[in-house]
Length: 138
Image 1 (cartoon, helix red, strand yellow):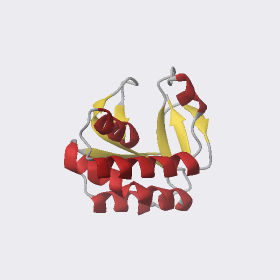
Image 2 (cartoon, rainbow, N blue to C red):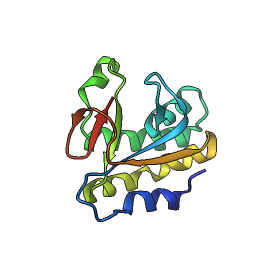
Image 3 (cartoon, rainbow, N blue to C red):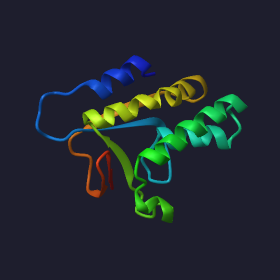
Image 4 (tube, rainbow, N blue to C red):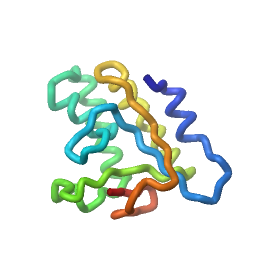
């Protein structure tokens, strides 16, 4: 299982390259995209299946609401993601600040679910969406 320090290391580690790097936090099981479920989806599953205490549910909802307010939502999510795209965070100083708020979600996964992984890539697939903080790929 990856650790919280591993998360901090992953989001703060730059290799000095001018190539844009991306990273994704996900669990080991796959979802409807055929790819591993991301951290938000995994926490939504914990909530949906009644695994979270009321305090943990409130914490997740607060973190989720903060990201909803501060991170643009790719438009394909409104249509149920028919393309089966997956989101990757951009590895930039601004995004690394945003991802520091993921620590409570990582702790929920560590407590209830299974291992999570931080995958890093410079070539994540065909980009179908991009904003200042993230991309979505097929």
